[in-house]
Length: 412
Ligand code: SF4
Image (cartoon, rainbow, N blue to C red; front, side):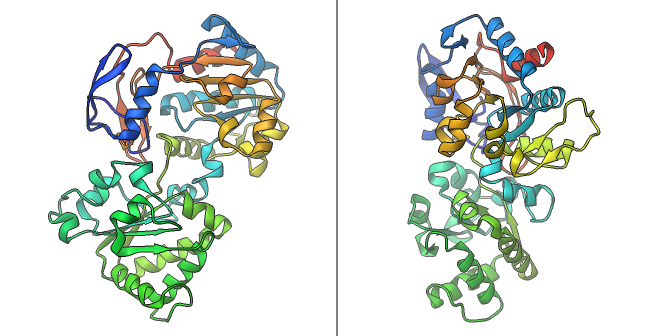
């Protein structure tokens, strides 16, 4: 039995039989997880400096040299690393006076901060399975992004208080700009919003909950939605990137909606985090600095010093001012806006990754790592904050992220 790190559900019930170069048998693995594990056999990285293969020791020493000589280094990625590796990464940032940031600064961070600081109520996925009678997916399509979400937790399973499950006791609502595969499954309560119209939809929901006629959308359908929500005993909203990107700086409106729902009944929020341990990084950094991401440590300021935090310390801001970057388990050159990717490509770049990507191909130093959950053990926080530990399934010659970072930390 192994744990899949293909998404933030961290399914712990995966059974695999591996034969040379392929997965020959798998139980409980979804198609996304299948792709995640299959990548074990393809496009693996090798230790490289300036495009030439070197020994691992040489790559690690070169990485340490670059970071040591940099005046304002950036350490970025982290959402695909274990808690143990993230801890060493934060220590490294402190030691070298670096800026540290993860993928949440341009995706779910704005919502995650409100969850982790208690402004928005949350619950575990086990609570969802046992008690939830309404699951509202907002700008999220778990059928594609988290393929076992509905079957393990939110719609199909028979929970402690939900033995009749989706046939009689669970309602699934989808609010999205398109009729996604999840919206097809929940088609009775699919509500289409115009791109960027989520705030208007929320205002209409607030109006309905206050007994007023909504000004947005199909009035009858909005009133029908209001009735479903009011009748709910234990509801959970699962916001995806669609909602977060659409709302941007209007997240207060979502908080107001959740507060209003909780004046009527019980509603919790669990963000649909993509990467397997984004939440872990956010929690660790929050515990140590008071901020969930985008933090800059001043060189030699000591453990008690308050770090700088703000847009300039996010990857988008820091890429323009940093003179070296270490990227771990992430491919910012593919995923980030062109200006940020170009800025990163223009400075000495160190990439720690088990697989090749545009970022590893452009990096000055590449350090191959073991794949967490398959070749390396550790712990991570599931999307709902539950701590999951996992052991390696197979032996690997590659070091784990934690081991690589520890060696860099010792060498700087
Ligand atoms: S749902 Fe996510 S964690 Fe579970 S098997 Fe699929 S990819 Fe892996």
